[in-house]
Amino acid sequence: MNTKQNTAASSNQPVAKRPRGFAAMDPAQQRRIASEGGRASHQSGRGHRFTSEEARAAGRKGGQASRGRSNQGAAA
Image (tube, rainbow, N blue to C red; front, side, top):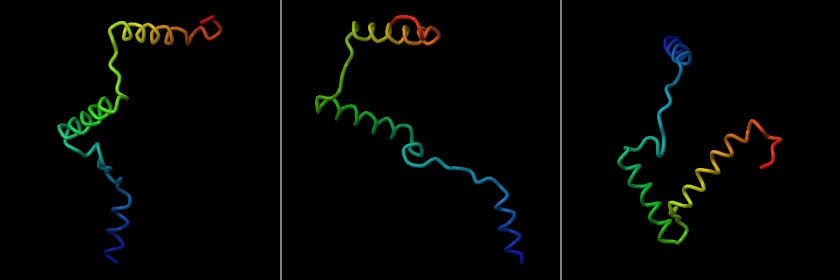
């Protein structure tokens, strides 16, 4: 009967979730793996580096989109 009491008592307590996978790794190891992915992307020709002009244009678009949400009926 003692084991039933322990089981019942432990089921009432929330189970602490532990991080799994990438989240459980050391931050340095996460950075190393992420940088490998970035390097592989550029080596395969799929990676993209923004020029300063492209970055400016992207920033402008982002600002316009966030302001445009309140005026959905306005011409874009």
